[in-house]
Length: 275
Image 1 (tube, rainbow, N blue to C red):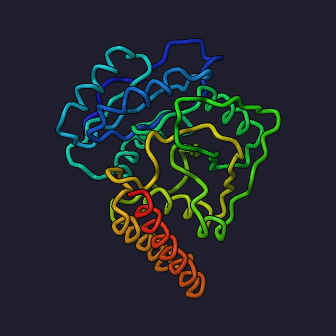
Image 2 (image 1 turned 60 degrees about the horizontal axis):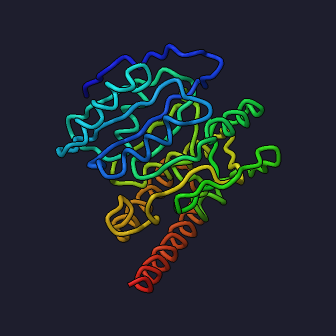
Image 3 (image 1 turned 120 degrees about the vertical axis):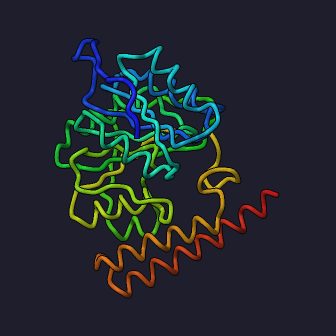
């Protein structure tokens, strides 16, 4: 792994949140501008943005280095020597992050302009929370008005998360000092991490408002989760990890795995309907 740039920020500290933004990048020259632009133009700026090239082998790294040159006080670029998937890329960013909070964004997603402002304000008022996400939707190019004064939140439990992943990665902010990391491509690494954090007793909350957008439908062909059977095997593998670690009882594991298979069949049916 090679780190390029120092990520120092010289702007007024009052306008900057203690947040490191982590964006894994793999052959994303067609979507990266929109994603990065949404992070650069937040109403509350992060302290740093870490871009990790996951051994793309096309023109992605060169694009990242150009962005670093243009925003040298804010952007830090990491070049991975071997492709390890988004989880390993996020870990590389996590390793060099300088701030106490991490915010995750993928290169084919984008944020509402007030995402960091609203989420950081909410977290500042709830210091007991270690993991926080919010709603997201498919982008139509529009950003809805957000009334942060009326934000409702939901405490996330293990059973809720086993029923449905309520924390899209593009929505998540978490404490950097949590004693967990993403696993590799053989599991749904983000889903597994959220479950590990919750099962360890850390407080996890979902803000019930939309502050992020996907640039293509979840589980669409071509995306990281677009190979439905591969994704399903990775989700089942994540549950096996929790079972082998003694975090899930046999009955809960069986019910969760069965429900995961039902969701997989539903996704296959819906995809066929779209053809």
